[in-house]
Length: 364
Image 1 (cartoon, rainbow, N blue to C red):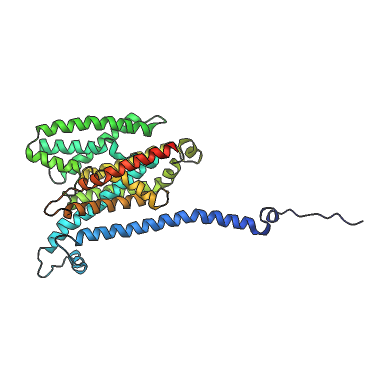
Image 2 (cartoon, rainbow, N blue to C red):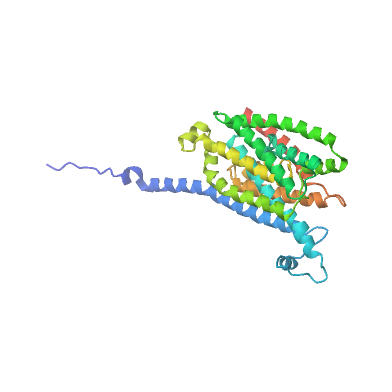
């Protein structure tokens, strides 16, 4: 009598006949790596574009500087035949470019964090009272205390932080804290707008003009102390931003699912606080530059194939502000438009398009 034939059902034969399991694993790994490679490529490309925009803003224009002379100026050398070149580059052109890059990055990151945390592509710190808190404080300081130099952005920063603290205290402790923060911010923004209008009616012509420049958003106050203040704020917030990136991605799935995955809703609310801080520092340095925070996130997502990247959004914001400032300075001869005018003129139609697209997506 022959022995019974036994078949071995090892995991290799069950799970991977003909190498199908290995092929499936390779397919999954490849599918996950492709978006990451695209995001990294986009971030690298945007970084190069931001540096190119910064150099173009510094070297080109009515007063052009060669790359060689620019390097010599950075070394502290005097350019023969152009004794004023160092002053023009180091005190006028380069500070505007650097401030535009830093403020644009802060606005872009803030907008992307708002849109990701609230799961709303139309969300933006522009709609809450952070910018108006800084603006109201700045207008009050300009009108009644003649604030100048570094005092003005410091006062504006205190105004933005104060408004942010009020919004956080009122909205905390509920499952809908993010949405409640936005609603509270809209109410505070309406109140602060009335305060600004009242103060403007009591201001002199000179103070009113200075206040209007601030309210529009401009890089005209670009000085190295102001840049240093903004840079310190960003250096403090960037590590927090890096730690929050995984939680921001989980927040897109909703509070319940993100909590199941180990990313509680408190992390998303912390993301809103950090976003408010980014917007506060940027607004304190430049004033409220319209639509930069709103546009940076959607543009970055379009470039990355629908994947959220806070770094890409920050770089998009830098490019927008630098390019907008360059256009405002040289688009119309003998007219220097604030960067907020350019971003507002270009951003308003794009916002209408985004609202229409969001409405169609909601009906689909």
